[in-house]
Every structure is written in C-alpha cells, then in structure tokens.
Length: 196
Image (cartoon, rainbow, N blue to C red; front, top):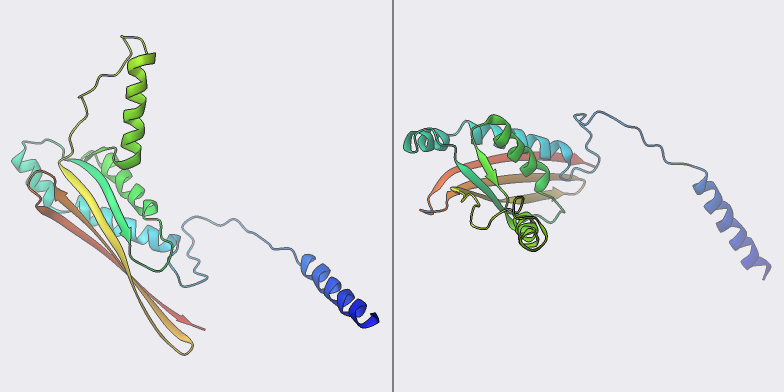
C-alpha cells in the first residue's frame, strides 16, 4: 500500500511541475516566416496566393477576353479546389487572396458560388414574402459567370531515416463555362527539406 502511495505522490509531483511551466505565446507580424513542422502553413498559403495573383492577372486570357468582348470584364465563379494531400489544407486561405486581387484590380468581376450563392438565394426567397415591394430583390437578375476557377493541391513526400522532403503543387485553372475551353492554368510549387 505504501508503494502505491509513493508512486501516486511521485506522479502528482510530476503533474504539478508540468503545470507550473506555462506556455508562452508571442504575437508576431503576419508576414514573419515561421515553419515549425515542415507541413503546409501560412507562409505557403501566402506564396501560393502571390504566385496565382501574378499569373492570373498577367495572363493572356484577360487580353483575349478584352479583345473579344470590347472591354467587358470577365465574370468568374470559384468552384472547388480539391485537397489531394494527406494534410488538412484549407484552400480558402489563398483563394480569398486571389478573389480580393481580382476585385481590387478592376479587371475581373466575381459572382458568389456554392454555399454562399445558396445563402444569397435563400435571402432573396425570403424577401419575396417579408420585404416591401419597393425593396424586394427580383429573381432572374443574377450575373452569369464566364469562367469557373477550379483546382487541386497535390503533395509528394520523400523520406529516409531522419530526413524528409515535402513537395506541394497547387494547380488552378479557369474554364470557359460556355465552351468548356481551359483558358488559364496557374501553378505554385513549394519544396521543404526537414532534417530531424
């Protein structure tokens, strides 16, 4: 019995000592490069966004659309970006940056897609019953998209003993909704070496 008491006492002392070592959190600038695990992180998301914004807004597809449609801005709807990696990667962190760049450039218009579009349509449906006739928004006035943005995130992992390489490739493409023609493909590649 005394032996169990001593073991319990030792475990309790270890738990108390562990609790006395508080974790310290420090705020840093959002553009600070910190890579703790070697997995996908915010720095990778920012690099991907920068690569895609540069490629998309500098792409020939914009010039071609402008020439064919006399200065009209193309309308883009964002579709699904599939995460094919073994990690949890939320593509919305870099897709939102790309959408913001589209809008802020004044060259591309965006329409809501997916669940966001359904939420807007739900609000419009409720307005038919609950809003005054003067403020109620009408059906059938949505802007049709010219292009859909879709893509995927792939990963290759190579490891040997205490060394590991994580390679990520993000591919995005714009497809003409009417003709099914792919008019732009952008890519961003990231390679990380981890030595344990």
